[in-house]
Amino acid sequence: MQLKIIKNLLVHAPMLKFVWLTLSALLFISSCSENETFIDPYYWKYSTPEKQNLNGGLLEQLNQKINDGGFGEIHSLLIMRNGYLVFEKYYRGYSQNQTHQIYSVTKSVTSTLIGIAIDQGKITSLDKKLLSFFQEYTSIANLDSNKQKMKLEDVLTMRSGLYWDEFTNPFSDPRNSIYKIISSSDWVKHVLDLPMVYEPGTKRTYNTGNTILLAGIIKNLYGIQANDLAQQYLFNHLGISNYKWETGAKGLTNTGWGLHLRPRDMIKFGLLYLNQGTWEKTSVISENWIGTSTKNYVYVSGGFSYGYHWWMMPLENISGHTPQPNDVSIAWGYGGQFVFVIPHLNMIVVSTANNKEGDDDQLTIKFLKDYIFKSVIN
Image 1 (cartoon, rainbow, N blue to C red):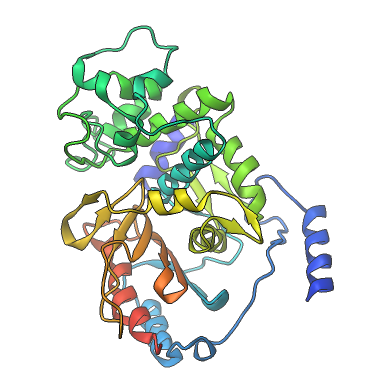
Image 2 (image 1 turned 90 degrees about the horizontal axis):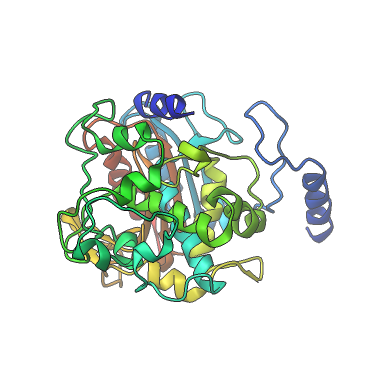
């Protein structure tokens, strides 16, 4: 399994709805392959861009440019506005029911699981000391006063202070922190043993190891792996069954980059946040967590900010709107995997890609601004 993960890194109406849901229940599959029959239980609504006050001509220009390779290797682009799917295109051989590795979008899904644990009273405070979640480890390396001060919130905002470097060297380099954790026999213990380089809560360093710690917390709180918790309390509500979630050492759910979803199911995840945690009149996660997790706690370069494993950016050049730092909530994965949640426009945009060179993953953000936002009529 570890070799498989390394390979992934390197290659890098009411009656109708009743019938639809009944059929989907009969064909429900916990993790079906791309070639198996799959029926989505969600009742999708469709519309033209124009009926939802979008410039369809501009979106077609974007479609042509993506087809021509003008934005690198885009695999899918979906746009939902006002609850209607107005744009759904797949490129370069990808298709509607095919799952795609979403890399660090997995982190935002994991953040949701922490919110569920808080809603259920399993976690009473984000100020709780991190080490208190891991009583099974009687000896932790590099233990000092800073490590003892680490809080759960520090992990969620990537300000734990633990040493981590996944950008200086390629993932295939033994010096890369991702390579090191994959090579370890206990992913959680590996992260807990790392030396502290900053006081907790003072400096943000993008640290996938922090997200792996969340997998360990979930396992200790519930006695099940994070993927099982997601299935029970998140995916079942959203009708998500066609997915894959990789594991690491000791069967630990890879909460850092291991989830594979269909783009349509990425839309569902965004819709849950757009609707303040409610799915078809059922509260899946509290409105409070939605607001708390997508608040800009840390400012990052390029106009971005960071919350609890969510990115944010302002919504600019929209008539009558004053940009705010967290106008757009972003679940952002390596290579150009995105879920954009834009409440002011009542819009969700999802894209998958294989843009892994330098800043190529930001090509999606470029066409979001240059085409999709500019297509908004009102």
